[in-house]
Image (cartoon, rainbow, N blue to C red; front, side, top):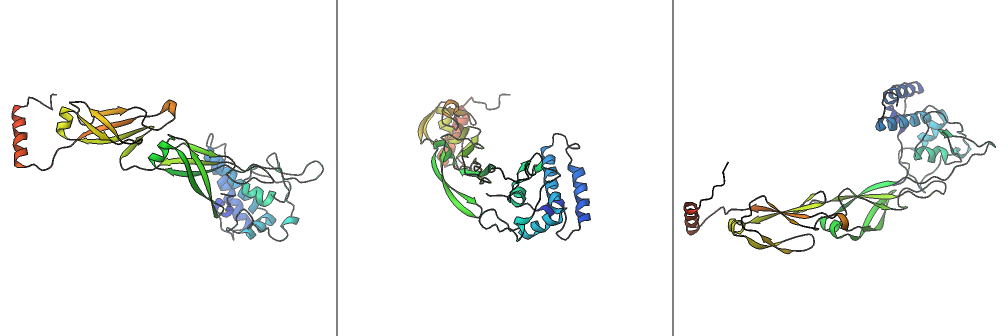
Length: 310
């Protein structure tokens, strides 16, 4: 987490040794390509247009470009940040261009006493610069859970990487949480600026594949192998669920592929919890004794069953 470093040269597709003319040409070409008027209702193009405007705002100005180059790509937000000598004496009032600059831009060029004013930064009527408090950005991370953890919920220790260091958080996982759901941890996102509050951390739940169950939305599916005589005559068999094993009655004449429902054994909240479906898969022996073969042949002779009545 922390403020993300912006490679302005990469955004414009130029090298660090490029001339101002080359930078201007690259900017104009990209600006035409991503201009919002030419890409209506295209959020990606709009975001790209803002990025290249921000990059050009820095690289077209000799003083800002010089300061930016001194930071280098290894800059990190936090106590390791060292402003270049003379930085505090530079005056960058009256920014023009794309506006809506990133946190990186604002930290580097706004942290010395600038405030956002309309589309850029500027002084108040008395000529005093101020940096108003800003809330930190929200951050999203992935939280991998087993199907059992998602079903039962509870507290789980989660390790998060934060600006090169790691921290461990206790997360309360709601019972029955669904794949793709987001768990909000207030104040655990990026740090705020100028005394502003921190953003939030959103953990996106990703449920790991299971060796027995398949996930279908909020429902879980289990394939249950049956012997032919169990499917024909009916049986009581032990079946695993996310809540422990149960005894399940298999009705006589249950064909392969039929699904039996166990209500409330899936994911979701108590008011909208999914089910477990037990899908019958009739298995046949792949090798027979001589006696077994004889019995199957006798059954074939006396049976009036036809599986292909169509």
